[in-house]
Length: 415
Image (tube, rainbow, N blue to C red; front, side, top):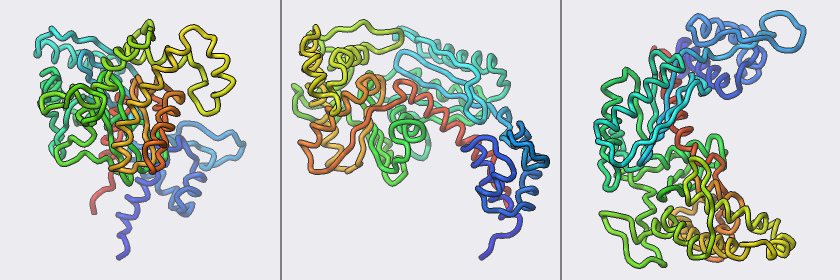
């Protein structure tokens, strides 16, 4: 059955808005070419969107032609303001942006483990409010929150998780109470996967697994273009995966003894100490990431397939080369154990090593893991280093907030 004229107009309007969001400002002629609509239809569409306050003229093309085709139309970016929070165990980071995702203000705040729950909630909420005020955002439309722990599918509720501070759950509830905005919470690793898929190492991939390597370890599973959360939101809790090389099995109360013990920050620090690798952590860089980065810098390009041979001969004379090379090799072995288990069950085709540690390891560590994985499994799996580092969670939260705002503001009108 053919769509009614009003429904067709609404669908075309939404298509044009999506194109303007993805491509940036466009002329009427470019909109005609991209949508396949007639020139009169595009002219009517542009007029409707301008009357609705969604689109405005933002400039002109470089050619010297006159008329509406030379005008550049863009989305009204200040139509809505968005915020994103990355809630960590001992800190919170905030960014406020416009409807197109351009950053207007950002801030972060440490929150010590000795801070009382209500005090921690107040400090985090106040940080968001101050940052929004600094950005000139008098009213936030949507707020995306990335947090460790399990998020219940359907309800979006952050569950009470052993080992995580109570202020995490209370903060989400407090923001629902204090803000007129739509507040969305998602597991941090899932948000990192969204960001790497849209902006980073998984761009264009409909099926992949992201391993988050930070203080702890987690995984996000994307299959056939959809994020898979599992029945209880626990898909990807790979830190609990029983693996060889640990002294005991994990339990329902903690992941010590699981994959977390091999590649969590404490396990990496112990491994580095064992092989004599040391590093001075840069500001805001976790110690485990600094250790991996130092090892990669010492080894140089010898960790990649292209760099072996001559680089190894030169590097052998570099102080600390052997220790760094062995450290990276053992770490790659450990990562391959978890990656092989994921690959055997899901066959994702690509695994992204994300988080601060994955970013610090870069292509050198990823290449080592891929080589070891190839020797362990008949399934071909690419391994890539995440490109967004520790910012992936915040970027994913902002993308979630932006999608929610645009879905509402750009929604076709009902018949």
